[in-house]
Length: 90
Image 1 (cartoon, one colour):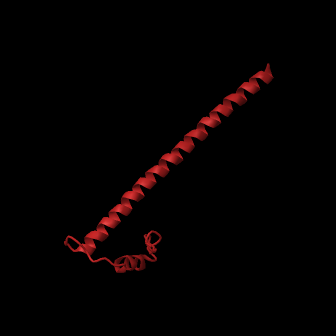
Image 2 (tube, rainbow, N blue to C red):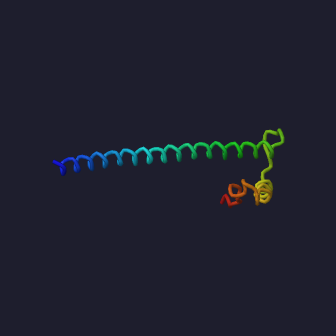
Image 3 (cartoon, rainbow, N blue to C red):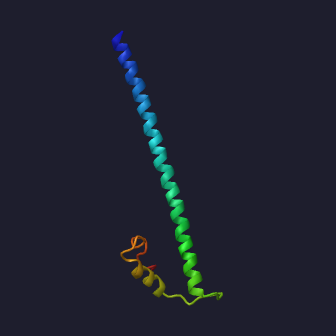
């Protein structure tokens, strides 16, 4: 009789553990999606602001890499520094 209770308790614990593990896994997935959505919006907003800055109210802008390089250089040592790295778009 004691052995049956132990097996039942172990199965019950195993099910409980699996449910908790699944909750944690779902939370990781949801938080990753949320972070990805926030970062996508943030990068889009940064791009929009760069365009506005470069255009100075004009319909079109003369683009170069000077602004991007300046942003990357200025951000070194700041909390934004890791996000602003100049890479070749080629």
